[in-house]
Length: 137
Length: 386
Image (cartoon, rainbow over all chains, first blue to last red; front, side):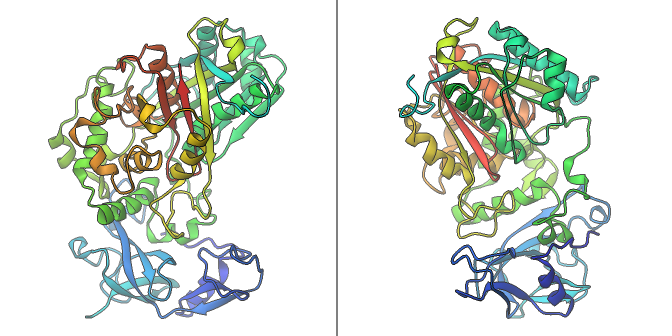
């Protein structure tokens, strides 16, 4: 399985994720959240940034179910899901991830016919990667 | 044409086109295929290789200018450019040559594309070059291939606008039907039915096998000169009426999930520029060659270039609209889905064939053709006229 290959701007996201925190880069000047992380703010051009903690709650914006041919490690798990989640605090911040049946469960642990756009989800962390589980309603 | 106010409108023309055979596997290497396509295009134009002084290509092309110029015997090159973003650069090569020729930077330009995508490796399998930003945000989660990235937008598009798999099938079918008329097309003798489409294997749900372009070895090229010079060439000139590149504000190539409106992409920004500098409107377009690495890109492009309203791309395909005799015949050589996938360059050459009147699926009296490059990446487009 591929690990995130980070860059200077992205590294803090993964450092926080390793501690079980979902944080998104924000401009310390005008307060706008931005993703993916970048050196400066496209709204006010400030280089001052902060990392704002998110609640970890959101909704499924879209999803796919990949089938082979895939890279080794992924092919064995197919069909699995990949979701894009829009965050409650900032619907235009959308994170790619996987919907899993529960914390620590694999990316093919949820039946694909249970996937829906709009499903409410919350973040859990597994080996430094954020994953998403359906909210109990 | 006077320099300045007129811009590049009708100042240049495509006067030669060339191509190699298309196949899943061709024995010759990429460089040899490039030379064959380029020399065929120059012969078609009736222009000697020694007169070439400009080249334009786009990335993921391994044959560079030095190799091509030495091998083919070009003259002194005074202009050469390479456009980024893979399939988004196809039309931009002609746009760059048109600008160079119109402003006197060069007089005979050649654009080309050669690929060994049929017998060579799939680019997404090379993880060493696939993990800079933004790959860290996508690939660890198994969003690995271009088809996965576009399927994500397609699912959202279908959800928001009520588009269906039948709409995607309409795109695949129109391309296949045209390929069935084109002896050079890889799918020339292989018809497609709705049952085949609906029962084919998934690649990345909601996209199936037939929503994906072919994997092809092959090469194509074209020759651009001034409108004045074009009148003395061997073939009927096809004028570059309008051209655009487009990287919209806050766009994010392929994984365009991170802006206010992910379902309007580069086509919209390209279209604004293209039509602004054109005497024509979408209603004047007789035939279109729309980049079709994946079927949903065609629906988005139909909206972006103004053939229908937002969210109407699926409905637009109904009633045979994309077929011969329909509202807008598209990809009349078979496109990337059924003729050959050579990063969209076959769409440029097919546009020229339509305006010469020599397409294997000729639209009677066609005088204006839109050609587009990849939607979903920083893109480009051409409006050609006879």
